Length: 435
Image (cartoon, rainbow, N blue to C red; front, side):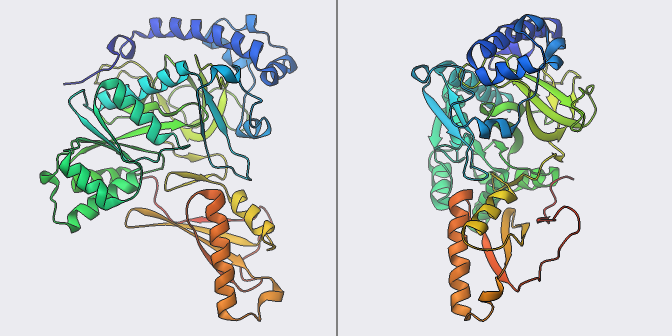
């Protein structure tokens, strides 16, 4: 039986949903204009005032925000509330040392956790479940989001965080966890680890999985479901917007329902900015409709995907988004972490190397691998093997410091990395991310 956390909202007829969005949008744009001088100036530049925005049809009049705007205004330039009204921050890794820091009022956290509660009940969970959260905690949004959502539903919540697989399996068995929340690659790893211990899928108590923070294929979904004996569902979110729970799959596994009462979604042509109709592939753009502390408007996610309006068999009316098909920028998602080549380039230049490098991403045993080939300087070619190994270890330490995940560095001969006459090719991604 389909379960709902807020059935009246999740199954709201489209005319009523549009009316709610219109009311929230009008109020939100006034809030942003009155409290975020940076965005007010962008509106003034294009000659738009809050009173010009009456419905969601008018949203196309408003200027976009990008991650560059967020970096340029780090840390406080896009805040919509004074610090005394904020109760938490969450953050992404920085691309060149500048992180994206998102601020939250208690209202913002309540909304975020409600969205995650919807996700838990949409897969089939309820207050009788034991939710095993092994997303990372701290600044990463995965752990705190699903943790809060589990509390809202009334589940017993295990705030495991990531790593320590032996302990994860012990707690799954001892406390009879029923819902697993983590990255899909870690879910696959847990399945393999359980198999090695002789634990069969039918012998564990897990029933459902809520997996996100990195791309995964339908083939990987099937493998996880078989290895753990569960139904595996997708979840999507961005730190800039709130975190996981912006959209999520229900038990029908037919696309992720966007929480449209809190987030207005558009698909645009990434080159022209023109709004595209439902069903066409384009760049996903979000406007949070009631976020107080960090109220972004028309935020370009850089994710390419499709929106579908047909009513889901579960009865929910909110628009669904398909898995992102790629990105319009050079960001990689590796083991749940956003990685930009510019981050690695920053480390190389800081450590005295020329920016001649190649990033090679792969996937072994359902876990992402990250290798970085870096050209030695001509003055280093006569160094002993031990000295070169020491240099590689230092670069690995410095890269981990900025990325938050490990990489294997290989120092290679000068001029051995192929040059390009056009835009330099910095990344080889050998993963199969789309079926």
